[in-house]
Image 1: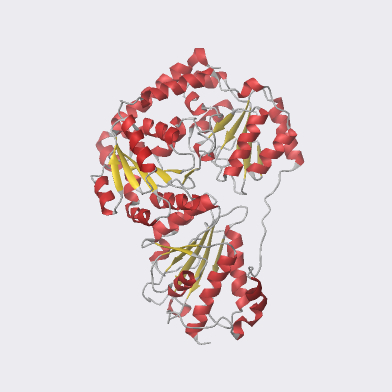
Image 2: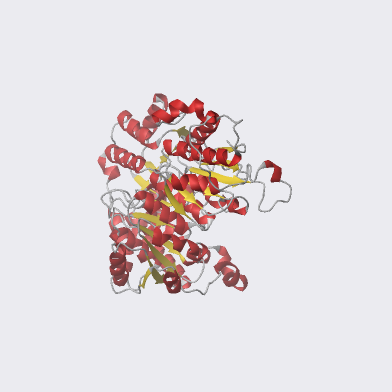
Length: 582
């Protein structure tokens, strides 16, 4: 075979082996050096190819897809800074344990470090954030075809292991890059005859998540049984099966449950709304937990960590589904690496239920939630609090919800309503908690979830990923973007820097004068705005079931929002207060 033929066949084998590993979503950005990979993916009958002019958007779309599908998408780009644009999504995927498979086309060895155009140091460029990285050789018959397939199989396995994450394959390719007419049956591929016949991967890897040891289970069961006031905290749980297992376990064992917004359990009607109660110092004093079981990943709110430091429970047990170190406050007494669902089921078998009254929803919860609900009266102006509260109440449970950083996810965690009879798919980028790529991530999450999606986002994050609005018209699942427009970074108003009036507005709040309505028009999206709570609810219901992507803008005032948060939390502390702590 000549060089053009081996390059074409080489690229075909890569794509075919990825498909045999069950990886069929390809997120491709146009470029010359990646031509052989792009053509191979586009011509394969079992792939789904999405095109992205912006590699950053492609990376975050693939991340959102991975969150919902629990499977990787493939990223393909050309050489140079195109590959660098994947970096933020790769960092987020790595820190949040989401699978990605990155194929970066590169110049061949003779062009690197020579000043050749569009050539940078790509090998190992994501070091520290990949589960595996490998430099493939230039396509050549001297490299065994079986070795190429084996490398692809290991890449597929590495990104989907018990601690999933990104894998980077750097793929140097020589010109000519356009495809050649070449048959798969060549001398180079003779060792692959069985592989061609049976349609399975060259080699397969099975990952068996660690099961909790009986001794560890017994120890946890004994601690929770002996505790005077135990508490279960559900942290980030990406898989709904994990969330359901934790909910079932706490329900059957009568254990009180704090559900972080990232646990997917926050809106379930059987959880305790402790987010509202913990604004009361007296409540915290009278309800100290002496044994705390944290299942899952990190939490969105800082408040639980502050509470645990004040409580200093006798036992703080963490169940994590990855081998990474966890415990920023260094107060964990027992750490167990286990799949959350497996641990929850086994703990339920090893522990007798506690008295039922400890798990009942107390009276203070109804009083606190009624106080929040007053802000949702039909004729009142829609606010950042009431928008989050109402959205969690009226959203179709079959739809997917994505929450942006920084204030939207916090408001939903704090003020979301417990009205849902079943688990609602909720996701967010909390690995590195950046504001980049959120529209693209939400679009990928909705598509892989197979249902319409809603994104709650602030105006600065919206502007940061404005070009990803281009994805929405072509998406298989419509995404409705609810934009909280408070003309700046609202979260900074809650920080001490807000008192520095000479620098705050320009250097931190950073107000931006741009038209969200014009952005919707530019990208051909439906648009509406809402002023009152009833207007928001009716607009949202109509647009979320229209079958078309769109934008709902809610205009708020940052200063009024800060006052409203403080006033509401003060009232909640009084309602729950010293005479009402159960």
